[in-house]
Image (cartoon, rainbow, N blue to C red):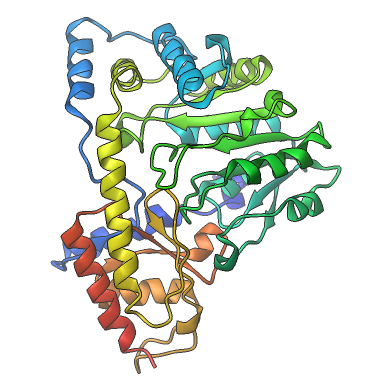
Length: 397
């Protein structure tokens, strides 16, 4: 009798992808759906990066690439780490992958054994837990709240550590909350990790360049834990290159070699043209990136101001990324006479079907009291979306 692998039962379909799919189905029926469920910049890749890709085709970069990435790209990444983060990752400690998601999956598969515990602060990016379960590990979650800006404390971290803990995964700036850790907050967490030398730390910094409050801080800067930190980044968010699928890690030589070995049996090297474009992105002036960041900041402020007019929406002030993660618990137990809202998933479906705005339920990110709102959209779309939300939510009593 034909059957599928049991590992498929260890995780669910990504809810961000699922909501986007439902939004497209409604749009296909003629509805004007505003999709704010995807974490994708609405900007085009800067022209000089596109030009580098076109030149790469003409110059014959059409063959297989080294598993860990072109030497020139690994050098550009090494230079970027040194220049922007004051981190020393030689080229043999860098692995280029098919997006930052692939980079994280490589590391999880290389560090987590069946039964290992992996600490993940809530809220978290949707795929962290699924990746851990796919590796037959057990996600251990630390709950945060909007009141503390969705950040964990050193005491919470220490309380979650057990002899089975092998890995800690977090993002800063965070998807879905936009929160980011200060140098002082990271130093306090690093002091805890220094007492537990058998734990690796994945620092997902894909939103590094979308930072509204100052210099980006990496937890790898602390010498006591540097060898155990895997710094993950990529070109998708800061350079509007989501479709190019280039992510990378900086890590110890042991981790880099292990990820290269793992990747060699899965995908081999990333796309040759995308790699050449990424060299241009990392080696060129960052003004287009800063222009995008400034646009996101304006949009954040626009949406925050409008959401103040909606009773029951409670949100932090995100320091980075392009998301709001409002607490919507005040709407639970309400109804418009037809639709009954018992949780954030009900609320998301209500808003999709009645306001034609696609959002993502907070339980996908580990906090069922919230929902994720992406403001990576044009100003007029955001204004229309919030007005629709305001109208639809006012009908709930």
